[in-house]
Image 1 (cartoon, rainbow, N blue to C red):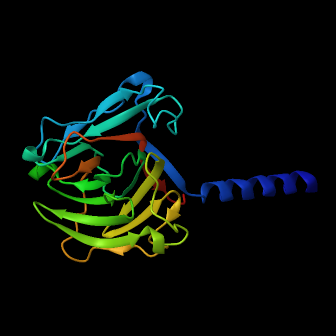
Image 2 (tube, helix red, strand yellow):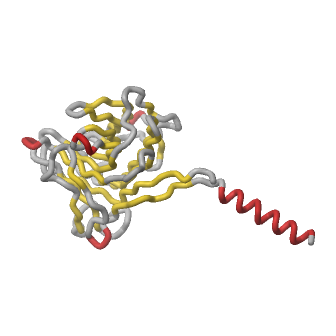
Amino acid sequence: MRLASRILLLASAVLVLTASTSGAVPIFSEHVTGGFLDLVWTPGFNTPQRVLQPLTMDPLDPAYANPSGDHTVAVAVNTHPDSGGIIMSVVDPGALADYTWESHMFTGAGNTRRGLVIRANPANGFTTAYQFVVESGLAQVRFRKLTGQGATTLASWFLPTTPPFNAALAQNTWIHLKVNAVGDDFRCWLNGVELTGGTPITDATAPYLTGWVGLYNFRFDLGLVPVYFDGAILSVEDGPT
């Protein structure tokens, strides 16, 4: 009986430990399965002629060895300069307001601003949103707040002076971006390193508390630039139960 009681006690402890452990729960993802988009993407920022497209890469493409290993990616080609030089493709997260949005992204020539979009507002054509982006030149990463036709930088990192990044990102390289939004607090990661260092960025001025997630590519004076994304994932944290 004493042995049986100890086994029961141990089993109970394991159940309690398991129940109190939190982790990321995927909600949806874009892996371009079999060369086709998994999700329904909506064009944003008043550019209906531009939306995310699937691409099966040629073996000679520098991005061919993509993170998922299937050689299929989502490609965001920005518009001509006379159409704004932008592409923003977004997906509806449903009722979710707090979430984590992440994706692998190819740096390419590093000649456009490119990255992730969160809390994009469908009521105004997604012209208001937050962005976590790598700037043209691959030396600066910023967390920005779009306010229609303008933007405010809420945080900025120059990679040569941000440990452990002692140099700008390399061209033609797959990198990983991740941003977490909870209320008016935001945390950002680059290649698994939290740039916010455990202290969230807080938007204390009329924060956007809900909105869609998406992918972004922009340069006002250069159009038709392709940017590759692979394995975009929306997830939430499951709390202790």
